[in-house]
Length: 548
Ligand SMILES: Cc1cc2nc3c(=O)[nH]c(=O)nc-3n(C[C@H](O)[C@H](O)[C@H](O)COP(=O)(O)OP(=O)(O)OC[C@H]3O[C@@H](n4cnc5c(N)ncnc54)[C@H](O)[C@@H]3O)c2cc1C
Ligand SMILES: *[C@@H]1O[C@H](CO)[C@@H](O)[C@H](O)[C@H]1NC(C)=O
Ligand SMILES: *[C@@H]1O[C@H](CO)[C@@H](O)[C@H](O)[C@H]1NC(C)=O
Image 1 (cartoon, rainbow, N blue to C red):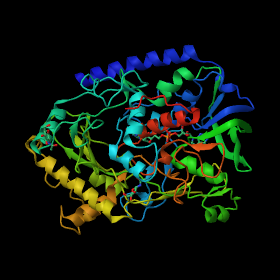
Image 2: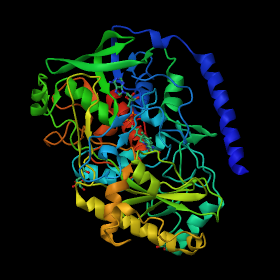
Image 3: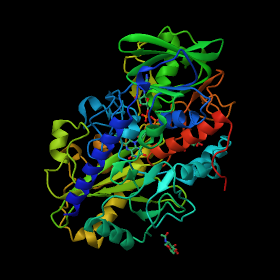
């Protein structure tokens, strides 16, 4: 009953959206000048925000170049996997044994709004200690006290219980609300109580505990950077947005970025900048574009005959959250919803557990044989998703060729650090405890539901069994980061300085999830929002958020 009502509300809101878009449409997409003050490459989460903030000054001209199209609706939670850049990783050595060619599918949003318009809308800032660690490593201006005002500035908290919290903001662009809560949500909280966990606001003071999922949804509609920032800014006369425009190279003369080459309607274009180029093409494509422009590891560029402009470790340090779906069938409870728990470690949760009150089909590309065992028949049930928040394995992005249209080589190198396996097994042990609590014991779950023939050489439920299970079926959480690492000037492992300027090159910044020195311990979209808000202030030379 309530579920149907929710769907009806969403549909109505979407129709209003389409109507408003039609009325507002102008010609901006077709106008491209020869020169702009700022050129922003990539209109995803970060690029949408940078273009909006920089064009707030009517005297500043800005061009946003985006490979994808404009889509008035984005995509709702249930179909995020359709509209994408369709990448696959290279075959993995230590994971993905239950997938074709041991490859992981990596969708990316090829649309105005980027991955922020195809994602699952989960609102998670990560641990305060992520940022404290960045600062300790030498990233001045990136401690928790420095970044918190930018989380608050970008937020429009809708949940009454959090509105007056000093950790949350009201009146910013991105709405934060929570989804429909079912009877099963309460069961999950009861299980948490039984295990001794408190209820918590996982974006507030205490990360450890059980909490209701916070999501970027406004009145039933996705609240993303492109919808909430760019939708209004797009019609400013000093901001041009060029869609279906694929950037192939940044032109660098005498160590200064001077312009951008891109292909639109099968034609080559060139625009130049008076001030700066901001690269916001995301964790895969920002390093790809830097390398195509001669900025990257010297030997790799030389192998491909690309003249070296700057020898920097671009594309290294790739990180992602690997996770595990644990489906359980039950007929005892009405299901279809998501909640969240973060747990373990007083300052640094190393596991995030999401309880999705539904069973999922094979969205992830398991081989047929694996899917037959692990993907449940449609029906009632829930899926607990366990993800590792602070992975230690490191991978890389490399070029396959000099052709900008060629897909780069993506190697997350999952589970190459065996400590990541141990952490995930730890997550499985918490999951086992949750299933042993009274609310779950009453659901009539099957004892051997997760006993797989592909790991039958190990004793069921032993550490070795779960390691085998993890190496077969763990999947990406779609959170790649850190391929253009930020850090102090003198650290040779880094690509950009603490103001996000590419080292040794003038007039070029990287602003997106690729600059995180390390992945944050939660979903990555909101930390990217914070990075973009912060970078806009660096570029303009202002402090727009009130310091605590
Ligand atoms: C399926 C999925 C689910 C997710 N769920 C969540 C979630 O629930 N919560 C959360 O916090 N995070 C989630 N994420 C992650 C989050 O969306 C990303 O971390 C975030 O969008 C990164 O922002 P970005 O600006 O770095 O890159 P993106 O948003 O990916 O933007 C990059 C943009 O650059 C454009 N581009 C790339 N190359 C070129 C080129 N050569 N020329 C022109 N344009 C180019 C792309 O088209 C894209 O628009 C999810 C991601 C995916 C894919
Ligand atoms: C990144 O993580 C590694 C491994 O935990 C740690 O040694 C390093 O100090 C971290 N660096 C930053 C900048 O957070
Ligand atoms: C739960 O909250 C109470 C009261 O604030 C506190 O004393 C207790 O330590 C908390 N328990 C956990 C596990 O965090």
